[in-house]
Image 1 (cartoon, rainbow, N blue to C red):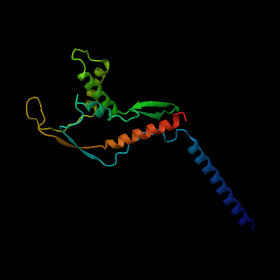
Image 2 (tube, rainbow, N blue to C red; image 1 turned 30 degrees about the vertical axis):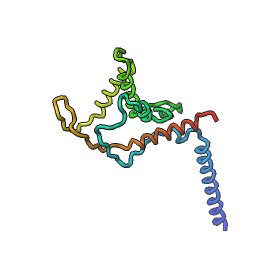
Image 3 (tube, helix red, strand yellow; image 1 turned 90 degrees about the horizontal axis):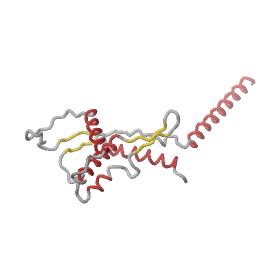
Image 4 (tube, helix red, strand yellow; image 1 turned 180 degrees about the vertical axis):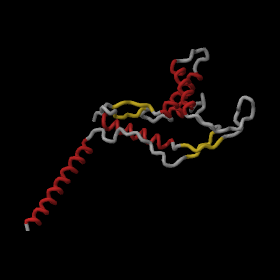
Length: 183
């Protein structure tokens, strides 16, 4: 009888302890202002095909060019927010979005006055894109039609799904807004 009572008291005690620990865990995660809000981990599950060649979009100076180039950047901008080990929120730019911003800056400089000196931003962007290409070098072969290296036709590439990157950026930005926007 005593042994049975001790067993039941032990079970009750450990069950109560589990409930208390679970309550603390749930409370901590439900009340943490940042929790997983400042995560940036794009999930690239399925590759996508990209046909590299001529396009009707993203021209240098067509009427819709500014709109098309601006839509390459999410409406909340190119920054994502991550917590440092010290708990501080740090801003980061996503490389692909930085590259798009640089291409647009070079495009705008190109469309500007012909005698305007290159802006510091344009010089930064040219160097940044050069370094990005060197770092992610593509050793694919493209058929050339002349000594200048004009490519004969478009090429098919298998790429990461960039829509997943946009989703991860937008989720991070929404989490940052929820955690830091005045209500």
